[in-house]
Length: 522
Image (cartoon, rainbow, N blue to C red; front, side, top):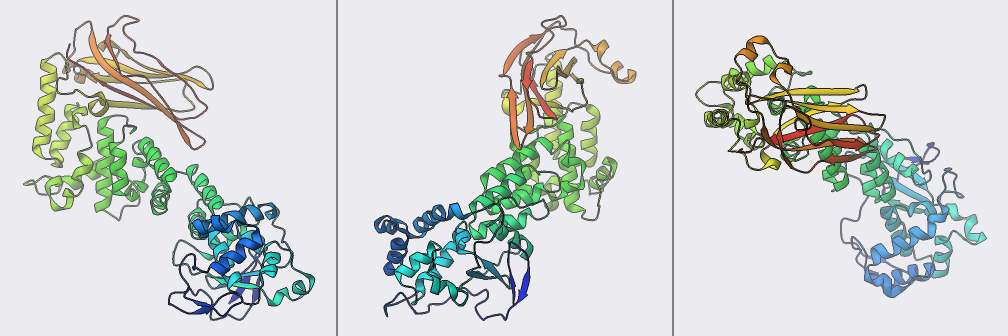
């Protein structure tokens, strides 16, 4: 076995003992204290009142209070007692007096530092009070780092040896060494390559301040290649702050970022389902969201591609299945039915896009028939979407990403003979505004053959129920700005042609602007 000092990182050879990595897994009688009383060790507080009394006496603690929760009470008091000894320089406080046997190494530590870790503190106290050679007075001196001279001289013979067995494969020796180094040094460099191992180590050590450091780093390093592992880590350790941040980040970036990279393959299905149901989900159009979800399914069934294939490759794959049954009703696709039920297929209004969906035979025919029928009914009723009632769950969704280089950016929308523009404007370095406005068909840029066969409404006014939302990430936290749900008549002449303007102040970029609306009956 090797001995390692976590601060200096130096190793020295030492014969391995039989205690390395052992845990008390069987009932074994032990002598406790200065008497010949016997007890069976237990997993948490051993039930030894003499040992607890000795600890409380040494630390001047209230025994009655300790008895209410002996495990946490003593540890929390000890952490406060030794807080003044924690330095930022990594300088050792005398010679190491604790040997931690773990992961095949012997780690040299100081008892004044290990009380930042509840796990090590419990192991240390248990070993200390079980020693028959330590009287209460000597125990008090040891805990307060004030050993008498004679004991100090032979303290190297009386080092406390504690053992910790770790079965978590996420805990590597390097990550564990970094965790132990944090007992001495406040600022230890971590990055996305080692933070998961350090997080796992901090969890096992019950080192709360280090655990939070890891979480804080992960919150600022979310990306397509880290989102999966960070989310699963949050689930594993029940860290709601982390899992919530992953869900919010993916709700914004599923379509514009993750959906364009091969990392889309690794998004867990349960996370994807949560994001699809989120009211914060961002997409350019409903068809963009559908294409992203179809690509995710394609990548689950085709593990070889190392890059995102072109759209036509994906369409050819789904078209290759027999036509007697649609893909979602096959055994291969049935498990993903709930994902596609989250989509708002009525938001796909392009005839070309709907024909493409029929060709690949992915959805049940009844779904597409219902969508097409609703479109015909809306056209026959002057654009009124009589089948849509709830803006929050049924609205047609459109969006734009306002990037740093933009001064102004807009997209145009055609729907049931009406033409709209969604727009964002940058006023200065931190001031932006977003709105939608009705435009004339002559302002709508589209190929002549398409315009010639498109329906154009001549109605002077169009009743619209809408909501505008803008979201931006600033220092790991999402800022959200939104209008109320507004019902307004849009004409061609200002001010009736323009919606309510959403004005925001933020230092973040890019800004994800979402526009949700329906055409109520009018």
